[in-house]
Length: 63
Image (cartoon, rainbow, N blue to C red; front, side):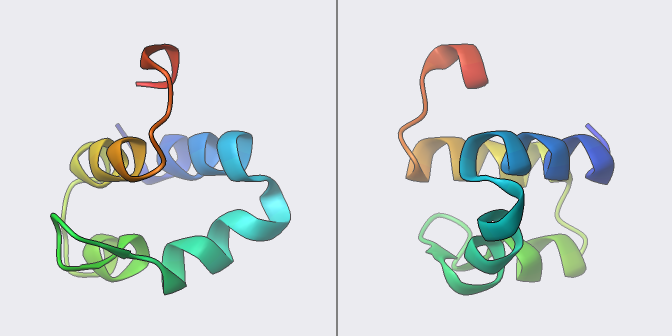
């Protein structure tokens, strides 16, 4: 997964106006940092998305 796909998924599930805000404020417990911090630190977007998916309790179709 590329960063562009990650952000497209975030925009889809949270809305374009809220996705970036959520990603920079909500700490993902399994990563012990926000999604934005994880991406900035070099965590693969696929791994960050998996954590977001679990945190938001999204349906399997969004995996």
